[in-house]
Length: 102
Length: 359
Image (cartoon, rainbow over all chains, first blue to last red; front, side, top):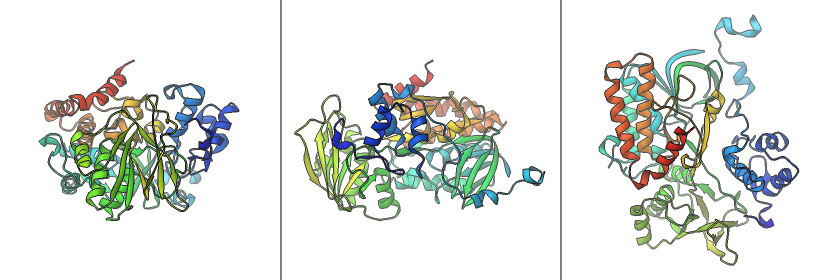
């Protein structure tokens, strides 16, 4: 898929990022997913990259010539899916482990 | 905060068998499943399994799941929790769990991650239109919830998943407009493919979907022929009427927890992407973290089950359980895996696993 007609194809659907936008980032020198993620929020939506990560890595590889096996893979941070602050605040720890009571 | 002997993460075929084997040897096991029911992909498999008797060949996947779950539930040393998704693994060994919207902390002595895989997406124009499904979603709708996903489906991918889901759709009264595959050959078993061909459904190799057409949902798809370097050949476009496009274009191991743990990872396309390194006992580069099933490389459920038994066995043995019977069991399980991976069907997985052992 090298044609312009695919520029409007959504590549990261959680964050609404098109293939054309991705190419513009790459052409500006954002050639790894770590930087791209910080600048564009790609892979940072509800699916946490499960849908788009491979597609983005493929596009970067195709446009830069650097194979995926050598690509910089961003950290997979906790939590893997959204969790409310309330749930975290209510977490039951052993008494001696509650840091704010020390 | 809880302390546990063995925690198995994921209640699909691999996780069920890991929990079962560890528990049979006497270990105390906690099985955590993020979904509201156990069985993973097995509960969508209404067809009978191949393989040998030891992997329940001739039995439907959904029945295999029920058998495994029944045995697990009969054991006093097994605790099963559903709606309990592990959402983090930390350097001190802690797992954080989102269990029915409660946030919990669990410290396992040994952990088996059997987290499976997620479906690969394909890039084509308008691929965000409603009616573009993953094959797993179609199977869930049909076989778990009894909902017909569409009336006329274009299937993309002629591997076993694409073929089997197509056939199940046909059995449910859904028309299959065509099955496409980007590769030069049908990837799945020919026994499945010929059943579908006999029913008059075209299977088009070296074809892919170029565009979905529709305003509020899929109304048609533009397909195109691909050349030998997988590029669309101009002028070969055809429009196919359909109300769904079903993508069966492969799976990606869902290895996030291994990344978080800092396990050594390798990119091996034959196994589906980045997978954790492991020794022959299914232990990763970090002591006490084991893996089983698709998360370590995309394979059939039968192999996932055997890997699960092997991981559960070794996790239990590392805690001092089952020392007398371990060696015999281990040898038998390794034989079963070798059998499953033998012959031309196992070429891909064998070459992937060989790469994993390199350097």
